[in-house]
Structures are given as C-alpha cells and as structure tokens.
Length: 222
Image (tube, rainbow, N blue to C red; front, side, top):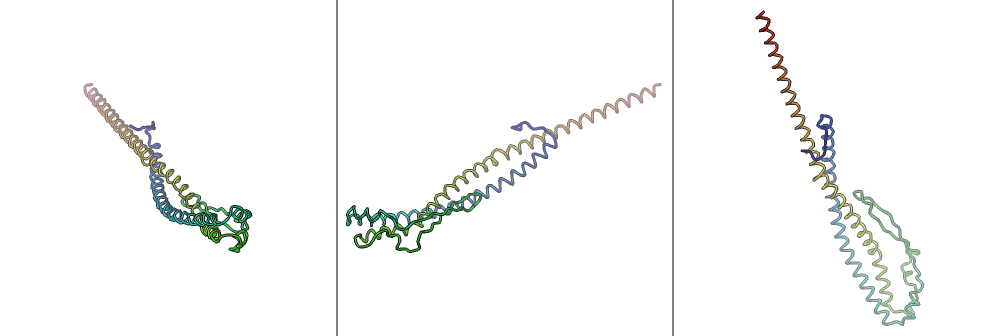
C-alpha cells in the first residue's frame, strides 16, 4: 500500500513516472557531486596538514629567536624597537566557485616593496636574534594566509558535503522508494479496475446472450 494517498489514474501514473525519472537523474548527479567534493576535500585536508606543520615550525622558530632577543635586550629597548611598525600590509579577499562552494582566496600587498622595511628599528642597539625572529614571521606570513584560506575551504566543503549527503539519502531512501511504491500501487489498482471491467463486460455479454436465447425460444413457441 502506498504511504501517501494518490489517485489511481493514468494521468497520475504518468506524472509519478516523470518524477521518478527526474529524481533518479538528480540522485546520480548529487552522488557524483558528493564523490567529487570528497576527493577535493581530502586533497585540501592533506594540503592543510602540510601547511599547518610548516606554519607551526616557522612560528616556533620565530618565538625561539624572540626569546633569545628578549634575554639579550632590555625591555625598554625592545618596546621602543617594536613600537612603530614601518611596513604595512593590505589584505585582499576574493573567492572562487568549486562545485557550487565559494572558496575564499586571500592575497596581500605591502605598502613598500623594500624587503628591509619589515624592520622598524635601527640595528645599532638591537639583537640579531630579533632580526631573525621578525624575518621568520615575515617568511611564514604567506603560508599563514594560505593556511587560513585552506582551513576555511575545508569548513565550507565539509558543510556542503554534509548537505549533499543528506539530499542523496533523502532521494535514495525516502523519495525514490516512495515514488516506486506509489507507481506500483497505481499499476495494481489500474490492473484491478481493468479486470473488474472485463468481468462486468463478460457478465453483461452473458446476460444479453441469455436474454436473446429466451427471446428466441419464446418466438418459436408462438
């Protein structure tokens, strides 16, 4: 028996068959989309792992050099050296569409192209360890942006995969079986109605033949 009430008519049967074809095609497309999203998601996860390890190593090296610099410099000199940054960074945000997911793209530009502008102090009263710390942070900054971009892409893709998975399951386990069950129910009802009609026609035919036979007998007796 069909789960939802349907009219057992040929028009309804045609409509349900069209819905089944559309649902089956949509189910295949969504499965292909889910599989491709999973493939790209796994690639992003691997890239994210490599970037995170690289960024953590760079930050660890920068912190190590900064600790050495702080040990060899007074707090007053260190605070004055880092008080007024000389370089500025301008972040640019764009996006690209990957399998209907808008993936962010981060880029940046510096105020001046001179690489030495990352140092906001003179070298006379500062430690070389401070230079190494700032240089390490400067070198790891592009990878930090790439890591942020990759992690956000992983979050967005994971959400899209989950949404696509729910749609695939809804089609596969609810909508398509229900359509097939309703189609089966209508076909069964139509066949039943057709058999009933044939039986009625046969009975009418028998009655007409019987009446014709009685009428013939009556005419002969007269």
